[in-house]
Amino acid sequence: MKRFFNMKPSLFYVSFIFIITSSIASAAEDAVKDATGKKVLNNVPYHIGPVTTAKGGGFKLTDTMNNKKICPFDVVQDPSASNLGDKFTFTLINEKRPPYLLTTHNLGIDSGSLKGPCEKSTFWTIPDAEAKAPDNLITTGGRFEEDITCFQLVEYPKPTNPKVHSYMLQHCPYYCGGAPNICFNVSIYVDKGVRRLASRGTHPFEFVFHKVSK
Ligand SMILES: *[C@@H]1O[C@H](CO)[C@@H](O)[C@H](O)[C@H]1NC(C)=O
Image 1 (cartoon, rainbow, N blue to C red):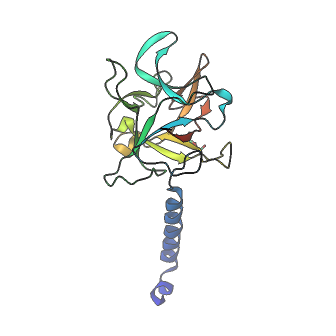
Image 2: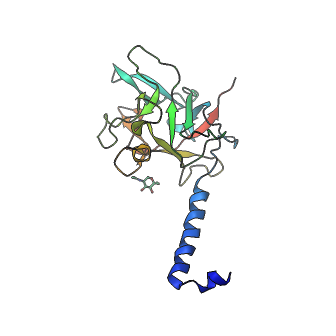
Image 3: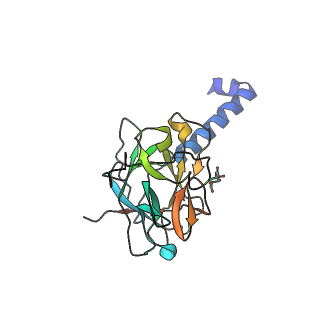
């Protein structure tokens, strides 16, 4: 204690600021919760959907755009409010494999099995996050632990329903060894009425996790 008070004032403030910032950092890292408030399991399939179904249901892969076949596939919102969409597996990039998902940690998002002969891989990727749509759309096609498949979950800043845990997704290639040194907020890009996920768009992508019923 004596040593602490004998510190030079500048050193005192540096330690003080350090303590404050490290407690903010640990507060930002939190277990992710599903729509019912239960912790979301790491590396387990879930449905992801909107907070309100006013604009449609859950998210799924699609192999069409403007009535043309596309490959790799895009991620879109199902227009039907009652559809839960596909199952997606969020996996933290961490050799210790904690049991639950954490916010502000690098992760990969897997769509499961290959859905067609042209699909090379099932991980969500943004090949060029700085490009304009459609080149900055989320597609399948990357591998786990690559810069282009590197995402983080962030608690949604101003949740639509404060009683429900909602999240946004950030694409952070830099944290997995890529560039540039920023995180892109995944947003909804509305194209001819179809709501697709992209590195930027017309609406922020606010979503909740739904446990898959057996
Ligand atoms: C991402 O969203 C957050 C929260 O709304 C905002 O503060 C931040 O400026 C956004 N970042 C970018 C790069 O748009």
